[in-house]
Length: 336
Length: 192
Image (cartoon, rainbow over all chains, first blue to last red; front, side, top):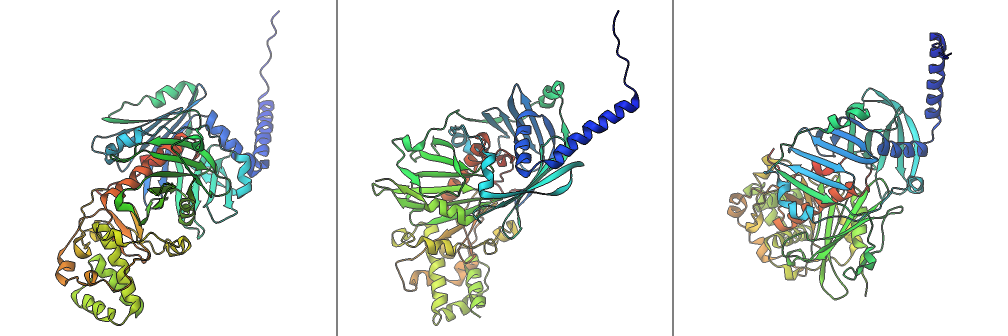
């Protein structure tokens, strides 16, 4: 005799679904801000999704097609701007490439970009963010027609920007990033305007886009961080980085023809990154301190004397307040 | 009054001053030490950009002072697009033709020039020079007073290279795990 369970009564099903949904909603409502951040980080590593997002870099507004897939535990991403220069950013695990049209100005930087190859094992420590940010659930709202919770990250020092993260209540995926300066002026904002989860059997279809680009720039990453202090050619250190920033990558690369190699280190607090480059200074740069702003990113550079009396060019790049970037640049010191 | 004069001086270095405005600045510079100081600063920057007088410029001595002189966002003069670019004029023939990077606003800070007196060279700017020279620069720099000047191609190129390398490395290293790769939107041309 075969036992055939009878289908549940519709009312029973409804009650059960409401109970489960209510329970999950209650869990979501009860999450602390830190738990939302951890859930958001996990969702990035586990879920596949796609959508259209708007990105304001403090200067211009761009619309992007964004596809995020997890394939055999590895994160794959395709990011394509829908206005401006025609480009496509592809990430497959640690392998990153940038597809460009032949007349794109980034093509002339091909050698420099491909010479990169940053070494890293960085894993953001979300548990430590509370040491440098006041983190709190700051309300609820709707982004891309989905219910979202807002987590505010207010820096304890004015050495970095304030951030609001809008996290999808159902999936914990980040739907909106809002970075503002201390006068509440937007530094960078992006948010999904359309969003959908992607089922496993649709992943390949979602990535099956033909390429019409003529140039591909490959950027490779290594698995381990090479402590730059151990490099005989690198005899400098940073006196200061903002609290909570840790070494997240190092690389040596040829950045310009006719110049020796540049040593590059990257620091991150888990949210934003800052790069420090040290290289021989061209004659034309001596005695001049320079600053540039591109969207939300600040670049500063100045020259200092190394322990052998040779002029070195220090350049710092980051999405941080200018005074912070300058202070990091001033903190480069050569070891005797 | 002083503020107005400084703005007029800035306009001179921007190539946007009228002849009578230039004459007024030159007249006032005889009696105003502040104005001469500003003029020396602008002239030094022009010299640097022309690749001249580099040996007479010192590195900043007091970095705290430098930091204080870094303009806040209100003082950085944002790029105004080609309308402004096409009217750009540099003092003394600094008309570097730059090909890239419209979205960069770059500040050059030159502190403590050795020559403490008004530079005869910098004052020897004719109306014709200011009014006739034009530069088609796509990149501008702002001085600590907000003046826009052009930036040599190698400095501009050097900053762009590092921006792009930073963008790519930050994303692939996981240093900015929840931001989109800025490199796809990094605009290095003003052609649009």
